[in-house]
Length: 200
Length: 295
Image (cartoon, rainbow over all chains, first blue to last red; front, side, top):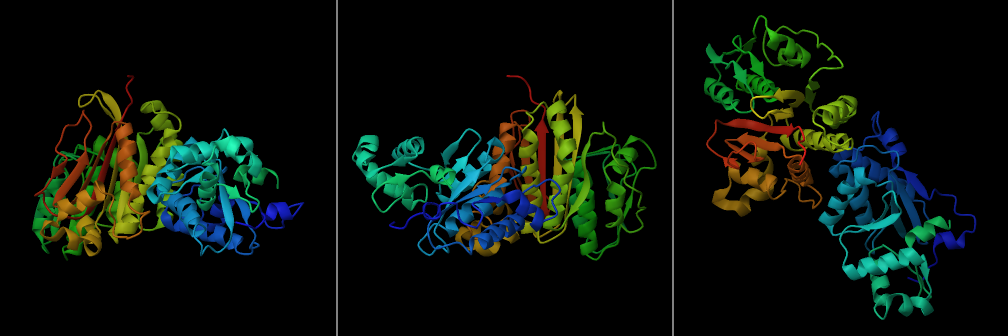
């Protein structure tokens, strides 16, 4: 990956939103009184609304926060659509945009549903579960350790890579970047997605 | 006219007697005589509605006689049974649903489920009452209302996504003093759709070959998480319901075709699979969540 993140390029940040309030989309999509994200058609409609908002994005890589803060109930069908299928859509080389995703307010109420659907698809995601960002979903112990280190350091420069993670640091971080769980920059360094979101 | 005698007590344990007699009626007019009814749970009420619906679908005129008085009449009113029955049984008097009082044992009146909007409506509606019953009566953690809502959503979606037919959901709290010595919440979900075997047949019957039947279809959905959709993300609903109900040491059973499959807790020993039951064309899901006891 040799591009620079859109955040880096635009000093004051781009015009498009860097966070999407899922509850607001639920309100626009269905007449749910309590911001309850239930049923598969609702999940599909919410995912499509999110994808629509992502369409005008620049081809440059970008970190997008999917914010569940005001969502009360998240059932498995909706978690599958709004988390797993959204990630799958932007995972492969034919993705419609170069977007990395963070998820917020996936606390204990939502965490179980999100972990189950991620596991079902063999996906992992970076989620703010109340006490900071965590890596949810299946990952090897080595991947988790590398991700934790990067999250703690926020950024790792090329010259610090071996010291921080040993000889396997580079392939591990490249692997995390391929899984869209970290950003691997063209100069051989890496950045945590949460750090990129904070610097916007 | 065939008369189907409804037992004085009708719940998830004996609803098959109703299905058996209703199925035997064929296109003959049928009267469901429930005048001796003294006690009924959500599964019993939904079974009556399903049996009436099946009789009507067979071309029969279905009628229902309810008790003239007694506690059960007030209970049926609170659960909205007369209103639901009026849409199924000919000549059934429609009475207004009495809104449950704050202290009512009714968690969810009989509610038709046909679309996803109905599922949203149910989930939105039960929040405050479910919170009170789950935390105060069953002594579950406060967060349990969210898990319960997810379960409710998933079981109701089963009707919309897989039954291709109308269905109902109802939930009620009971004090099972003699049976269990604890309070329980009983949730019944029934439809008269195409059932698990038919729903899964196109996608899965071929690979099961001669073994394909009601039991195999229920095992495929209940144990293996298979659905009629090839999508990997499907089929989690029932699996997650089983996991959560097991955490609460509850009972979950599904009745479809001639079979029943269940996850039974220690307080309700029963075979995991039963076959050879009277044919029931749709699906009936029964959940019993018991009061938490301290370890």
